[in-house]
Amino acid sequence: MTIAVDFDGTIVEHRYPEIGKELPFATQTLRMLIEDRHRLILWSVREGKLLEDAVEWCRQRGVEFYAVNKDFPEEEENKNQSFSRKLKADVWIDDRNIGGLPDWGTIYQMITERKSYERIMMERFSTEDHKPKKKWWQI
Image (cartoon, rainbow, N blue to C red; front, side, top):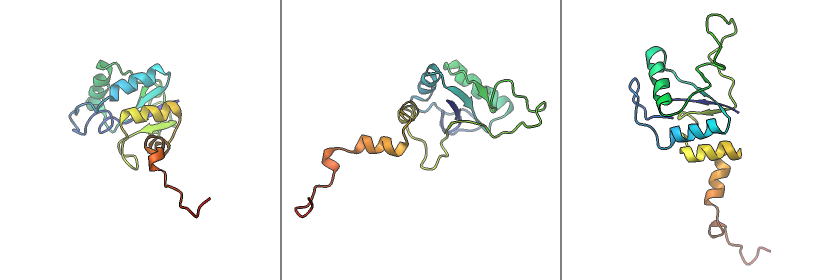
């Protein structure tokens, strides 16, 4: 699976143009996804030196991206007329999702088990105690 991952607010806290503190378990989860043979693409508004710094920050923590701000490593902006900043990814991990960013453990579970956030939350919080009790008139 190809997974596009935002940097600021997703892997690290928002401190742009500086690099914020790592969000709990972000790089650990990214390394696990790489070990699971997913292709990770860093997808960031950062450019130039700021982007290089983010890539190096990840590299120092054992996260090597398949590509950065492009679909594949060999893609070049000036040599390809069809170059587009729109990625072809199966999954996007971004703090600007509707509903916000789940914790990284939940993100990993969603990807590996191919379940929606809603389904995971329903499974996590549904127990016999939370089911409505039947009324005497219901069979």
